[in-house]
Length: 335
Image (cartoon, rainbow, N blue to C red):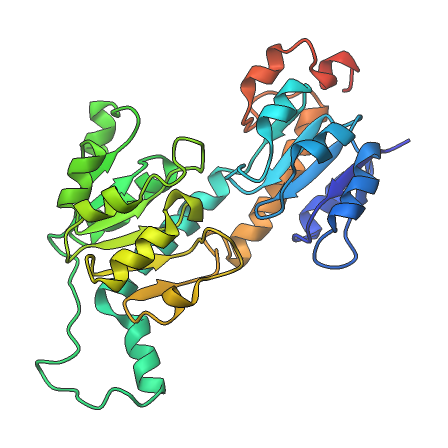
């Protein structure tokens, strides 16, 4: 009997067809399964392909008595109760490498957009609200010689730093731990604490995963540190920012603007943000390119195949699970 793979959301199908000889793939009829459908199907499945924005909570994981692998379609795994999965001996993987370049591209695009007021001017021209094209009108902010503060100089942060250097920007960064000197030299990046970064950066880009430590990492006190001429860019997770605090600071023009790919309660976007001219909004599209989404499906398929062949080097989010006495893959002798 074939092992069952439950795919919680419609993703590009073609790359996963390589699994059909050994697995039964269960796809939703529409865009996604309802919670009721997931609850009914998950007890019979050994793999779940989860998707960001679609929670896989402790209740669902506990109901999945045969589950060995959660293969997340995306880099961030805040949609999964990883702690519960680890307790039950379930391996959790993600697709980190594929999203790096497109997310950095988007972050750079948002920086350019909000700095040069591209979306604002586009809206104004279409609505025939911009009539004065004079030399002293419609100014933006140039990037050359400006300081980009990257909060989270991981893979995406490094890819963004490379792009910023090409625009003649200076790079400072804040991580939990200072990087090795040769890495800092490669990206011409200077380490600093978060407070100093916020005080000195002309653009602040958030590139951290959502964890208990990073939830509301940027709130009223942090926003108050930023320069009135500074811009905030977020391509990580919406909850990294206290959204109400950001709205208040933007209303008072205490920072120059923001560009946001992610929001606290997606897909809902507060009206206050929608009607602000100095805010650029996009619908969580960091990895949303034709090439990337297909590559993500390909990586998920490869992870599943390699996992059941006992291969190493998988992008495991909870590596401590391998040493667990409850490890289901080991206990049941799957291969």
